[in-house]
Length: 298
Length: 265
Image: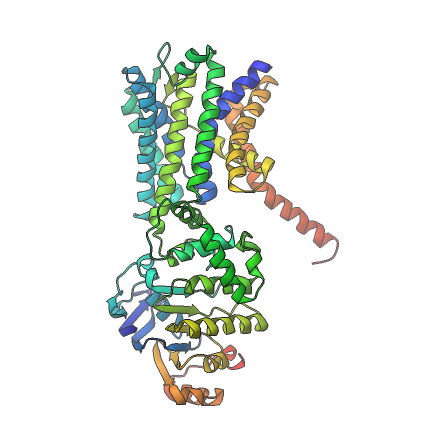
């Protein structure tokens, strides 16, 4: 059991980066960005390709982030300049990325077995096994990202991005180009998601064309778990709650699998989790309305 | 300060719902003019304001602000010259952000936004001071979410945000219509005070005849997409609601009814 928990924590820390990316588009900008499904694979593909062709894992990671940001830029332009609804523009970018990912990798998957990864220096230096070094790197990366984003959303540009998701009319009235803020938000989000993909690929020792399928739903499930546990409080707490949400999601998944749920049902289970989180407020409202009408009042 | 020349705007062109919203509207405002704009539903007053603000472009005609041609300038670009308060108290502020963050966003209108802090401690002192002048008890609530404020408080805050950077033109679009009469009066008085204190050139759309008469130094009444009545100076000062109704009857020439809420207001 302990092994399962440690595995869940290490995987959760890597997926936390992705959850924070989803948080930027879903909670800050207020749109569900399907690009995530493509950019997580893109990140894994680019990093794996670089490592397997002998480049350093750090270089692969940085290039993965850059490519993810480029994917976010494309989606942002489709949405803001060509006025394609955000859900559709995300689906289009995601679909296009499927071909691009295949081109990057040259085949459906790349194995990284016995190759250096970003986790190798840590496991060498402290003489740790892979799982523990993933946790060390994951904690450091998550802490760094939270600090960076906490700072960024407090700056003038960061405030403008936050305000855009809240009230775009007002933001334009304050002389801010909302197209730019939306594009910046999407770039930031997809850069993080690709980074997450690059790290996930290296931790499991392979990149796979299909690894992004259902990723957005996993991100949303983690996000809702974080929100339920920590509430919608200050920015710092909200960002931190994404990390815990992602870890707890992994622990839940590991537990239900251990309890005997077939792995094939995983995506169904995750989707139901998200559906419950999204519909709960409405069900509550409906129940309250019922109760009120039963008691004869308004 | 504002020069509107031969403005035309048609909505749903070429369909059965085609509607002439602005028909050859020309208007010139001097520095410090405070004009109230009145008219029934569909008279074109909001369309005129939105064309000036850049929400949508006019079909023809031109708009100049302080001899800058802004006719085709994008909304966010010309925002640098404009202060705006909307009818809906929710539209002028970010409900999920706190008071000081909202003010800080407005404080940087027309300026480059970079990676320096969104709100500085020096600004906080200034904001507290400004909020105190509103006398709504907001000066001690700088870090409260704006979503928690009442409609009147939100409008007063929006007003403060709109005037923080001394706009060339202040656009008030029925900004008290959603408030109860007492709060509306208070917000109007605050508006009037700021406008006079700063000497702001202002266009205020209202559906309330009495407010239109009480405030400002000029009054225009719109009907069917054009300016039907335009009074200023002494003539405006002596104006009564009865005069206004008579002027309206004379000017409109079409079988158009004055909406009840305009008389009753």
